[in-house]
Image 1 (cartoon, one colour):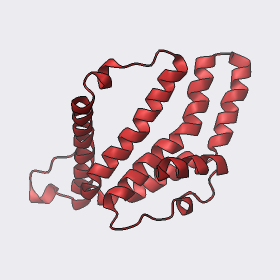
Image 2 (cartoon, one colour):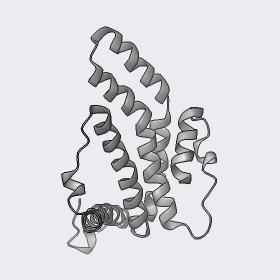
Image 3 (cartoon, helix red, strand yellow):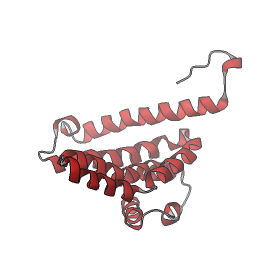
Length: 169
């Protein structure tokens, strides 16, 4: 992050980016504080017992946490929409192909945890990026949101359907 001390050092785009980052991180702190007040001891104390449960918990907390944070910080991060859209498009590119490659690789290395991480990341990272984008869009919405499906043109049908379901809840 850049700190501008003199008029000549100031760049409005840099300052907007800094404000977006600070507001996003402050929203994380506020969100954690609210969860701790609402559900004492759960945020830090609860841990799933099974490996699959731990993965589910990790992804669920990430999806909803980033959605809430982006929604809360959107008024101070209006210029971030393009970055969120670009990140989602990047993660959607060949997500299924990357997951299939992780599964093919598993047939050689045989490491279950590794294949779950690699294939899971390829398939679930688009959902996390969608959480950023649609949290942001909800936060700046002045009326109805855009058609979600139109945001996902060209994406794998199953992944696009999962994102539409996630966002519509």
